[in-house]
Length: 344
Ligand SMILES: C[S@@+](CC[C@H](N)C(=O)[O-])C[C@H]1O[C@@H](n2cnc3c(N)ncnc32)[C@H](O)[C@@H]1O
Image (cartoon, rainbow, N blue to C red):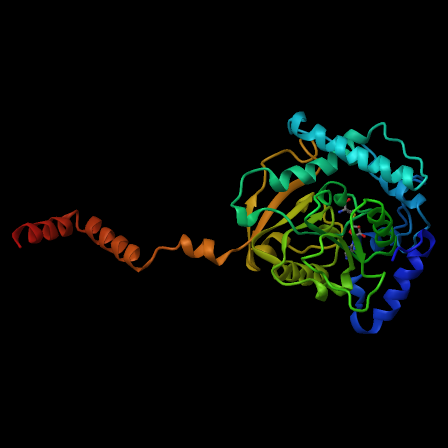
């Protein structure tokens, strides 16, 4: 059942109030960076979003899309980037037209289009075994929903966005409703909402219902320009959840400014990931912002099969011990064994 554009916010708050006493915690639904920014009375330009607690209608989509205010840098080959930028532009033009909005696409290829292309290319940059191919995706802190543009094109996968902020959630609902894929939003029918691997399409869930995310289900969690803006209690909770819901060997794709920009807290996210079952697989040695906006990283949930396959077995350990003893004895051990073998 589609929600009419003007009812999205009412439906969001109805659901929020319904779930408030049972599921909602203040720290779970907080965007600490914006709370701090409000206290410091720092405002964005009038063409950009303000007051994230309120959704003012479809015009907010244009404001959020304007929140990519400069041309970003790129070092990836254009033959990789350009077709994705074009696909992304086509989709966004379709959505903007369907919503009767006006958006200036002049710099699209250096702003939203480029960001979308980068977040599509990096997670699949190099070959991986078949079991690690990306199908089901969770986008944590999804902004206006832009990752669905390229990642939800595939008609057989599941793309799920998780967010808690009223303006973001409502915009995501609006954007996803216009992508042209089956769309299942928790706020449409919270009762009995479930994620069904037989039903591909776009799913949408508020952060406070992370309990509905199935175990070992996702091939990728994306967290782009979000983790450093949240409180450490929420981060600890969500990273543990990411570990629960990712398949063994699946990835957590993070792109942000790392320790260079931590507006919400001092937590050492890398150390937390290492001590909670993730290994860092990819982090390019590039100059922040001169080469690319943010540093993309691929963390992989440890797969016990991989770890065990690389562990020496009992025989290999014995051989290694014998080799050490032989080296220590200056090769005498091997000679003695060799002589014994030739005598007997
Ligand atoms: C800077 S925006 C980045 C948006 C998006 N990832 C992108 O790259 O365009 C931060 C996002 O984090 C979301 N966010 C903030 N607090 C959150 C929370 N408690 N739970 C989930 N998402 C949250 C915001 O609503 C927003 O969508």
